Length: 284
Image 1 (cartoon, rainbow, N blue to C red):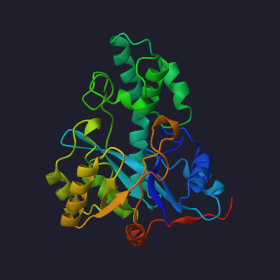
Image 2: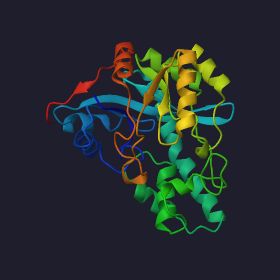
Image 3: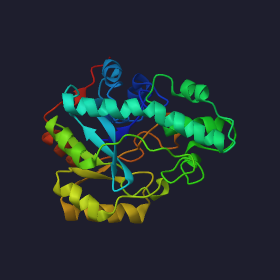
């Protein structure tokens, strides 16, 4: 089995619609794909309706969190999307995305960048607006070569000149809320140092003690020594070690299925979940 547990669609900051994403996943030879848009479950219905035969959909979301001044992302799988407390927190984060993005546009204009909010809003479309949409605008303006080039201190990284903080969950609350909704939590790309400051390993141990289920080990932003280090940490802390592409369509260079999760790890995630279940494709 080939299992990719971290992808994004136009419901947040990917460039493929949910339908295009699941069709692309099947074409890439995947057996299981998780749709984990930022702080939203808005793409799940379309993905289900278009799910090809032979492909299983894992519903999820990537939750925006912050601990000790450091931003982190928490992948949440197979939770009940109607659970009210978690739904309310996702809405708070989503509602803050527009003023936050407008603030970053204002900072960029102060730096002399001829960017406009209308340009960013057009790129975001109906998706949950975020830094990749602003980064795309910077590419379109010819200021940088790729979206990834925007995530530096020069521009939009967590310590960047145009960075603006948004409403984010406490990760301990995120773990509690996801568990209460029957879901499973995995810390996304925990040592992606090029994105900015990372959470120390001592904090990962505290999250594990609070019920964190796993950490994303095999990821494009982790080099081989980092993956080995994280795999050892997962073993020490009793955490599941996952792998995934973090696919964003044409906004990133990664391919669907570039990194994958071991079938036994996937089976344990499904076993632990009670809020929702994987959706088998029937050729929709």
